[in-house]
Length: 408
Image (cartoon, rainbow, N blue to C red; front, side, top):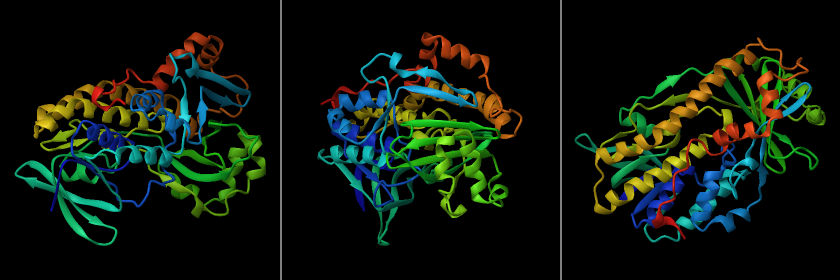
């Protein structure tokens, strides 16, 4: 049996940021990641301004800017008559007034490399957490199994669940999220990208169909929204029909209409929107998607998860150095992060009900419209108004300050 101060389960953005920050606070921390590397198609590629600020504060800004990336400064909503800018991040205070598009595996590798230089940090890949260890009603560690079949246990003063929206640890602790209805699921697939294609994040909207194309330099990672629960029925049609709908609204993709040979190349993501009423039990804290699964609308889930980690590190470092974290310490993290979480989810629920659901149910003929809706025309005309959605998308309600102990 091994021992550590903090055992972080899940090597995503929240887990890796938390591990690095706590290690710089002198806390012994072990991060468990069940995969052998960070290469996953379902990784998001957005690095928002607060995370860019954090990287600069940590002394990692120069190394991050060496990674292959593109910038998103404006958010546009397309329609048949063209596209209108509804958010201009360049109007936000700089210098990091943009969203960086970086493959998330490169971002995570950068964090892991920096964390490994800290003497109190350990990253164990190919190590899957199989359950929690209890002493009475308090979580005191985890059980694990490696890819080679080896099993073992790790004792910890605190276990942090950063294992995503299907969190096994959350379930084992008896924590049950409150779920909200979502109108869509997502088809996830790749298409070739050409050098003269648009860059960054590209939205495509048509009748009963909406898609987001994520620029991964040599290919597009495409997320096509479909009506909730309609995956099986839609797959009875040729996969070419789906691409034809995409090409109708984005003619520049016409030469890639045959880019998919079968439905086997299309994965389905079950979209969830939920939130835990309580993020902790004694000895266990949930962060990121394990505490609040976000809709992909706005692409803000990663930013919220990283901000969760920054707040948790700042609030818990001192109790952890003293050797024991109380439930009141853990409750402070939820209180700090609840308002921005609720604000974003409330906005997403509104957009689901008023925009996406009517579109996906075929009640809005977006593709036939030659004029954008009035609110979008107003936003596009008055540049100062574009700071409002830019603030919500780019920075959220507020940015968590970087702990002094982590700055370099």
